[in-house]
Image (cartoon, rainbow, N blue to C red; front, side):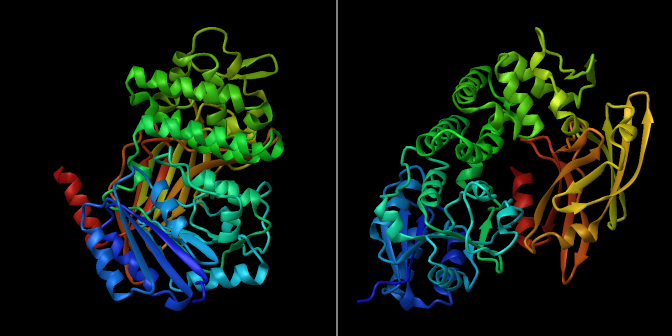
Length: 509
């Protein structure tokens, strides 16, 4: 019997009713049942998902294979079990609460065969406002370099892998990582691959943010995530020799996973947990954060990781200033610029002279004013009373990829105020049909260079949604502060019965 073209591995644990839609999207693939196999590994589900798998396997015995096992605590073990059973020329991993576009597997396999690719990425989009990095999907490319592209920001395992590559290097998921285990696997596959390709012509993968917010990524505990982040960074260093290539990958991990460990919600941890997190972050900084790598990070991450060297209390002071009081004034000493954080000792690590453009881009949103449901005006404050003259041009705000119209910059005794207007129709047009979050950033250009920084909202309350029609559907548009990062976000979400029910359940709890 001829081997299938592709084996789809589905780790399953308590994802009903999303699992039903996931399996329907797989069984309906245009590639046809003869060219594919589905290997579903039930990792001890208790919600009836195992029974559904058995029922569908009885209807599709030549396509769907089901394995049941005791719960392992994460997706790594069921993914490895699926790999051991896979027989296809290629393998593709699907989260059991996610969906594939109807033509996804056929298009992916055809591209891999046409180009001789070992790894193929198909455009992944978020559902229910789940954020997915999109830079890597800017265009279709037959050949993408791991170290000279946005690929390090897209290390989820939702890709087509040539199974011969996987078996030749005996690539498997690290079972000591309850979360993030797909990243070392994907990274090594891309590192070993002869060719990596990207398809940006179709929505191949639909990553669903469950309305009960129970995806393992969203509910992982601090201690669990802490251990996995340290393993993740250390394994990059084990795989890739020191130098520019390693830094190209670690830029993502320090800019995202490590940065999240010292995000605003660090303040809400108990002191013993803060000390544990701090110790791990300090070890990672001392082992792996080179000067060149530090200079590639966002300004908030640079400042916080620099504060790690000064001590836990100084780190808490920096985070507390950003999260609770807003951007501090600039302290000038000769030709040096210092961030005026209230810390102990000599604050040499607050020197932002080399980052003046990014520092000037640090603003705090103070008001959001709606004009009906057609537009919203965001007013943001800078501690620099000469912001307009220092920058030499309009200060711009971007909500995701949507740029607002700068109305004016005015000054008062506390600094400068910037007003920027966004058309709601522009935000809707830039959103997926299933909704999208648009984080706000400030962009400046002027004599001190080009800079950017997240737009924070330390004291701005969440607003009630405004309803707006786009096409045939109604959407709710609202602004709010991301609890982890403190960044102002414009969220667009379709008005559906499921969302209304989920909101009522949360209010009831």
